Image (cartoon, rainbow, N blue to C red; front, side, top):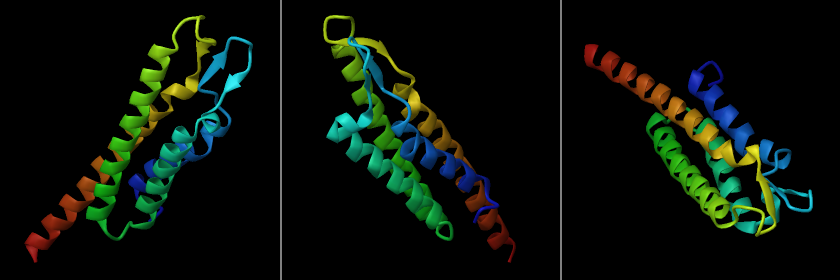
Length: 137
C-alpha cells in the first residue's frame, strides 16, 4: 500500500485538504483579521468530504477501480470548491465588501486537483499493468 506512488499523492492530498486549511487563511478581512474555512459551514462540509474521500481512497488500495472512481469524485468535489472560492472572491472583490486581500488558501483546491490527477494516472497505470499480465496467462 505505502510503496505505491498513488498512495503518496493521496496522502499529500489528504494533508492539503485536511490539515493545511486550519493554518492557511482563505483571505484577509479589511480590519486585518484572517478568514478561515471554518467560518463558513459549507466550506467545512466540502473540505471534510474531500478529506474523507482521500482517506477512503488510500484504504481501498486493493480495489483499484473503486480507488479510481473515488479519485474522480474527489476531483469533482474540489472543482466545486474551487468554483465556490472563485465566485466568492469575484463577489467580494475590492475594498468595498470587507475583503482586503485574497489568501493562499484559495489555491489549495488547485493543488489537491493536481495531486488527485497524478494519483489517478498512477492507478490507471497499475490497472493497465495488471490487465497486461492477465493477458499473458
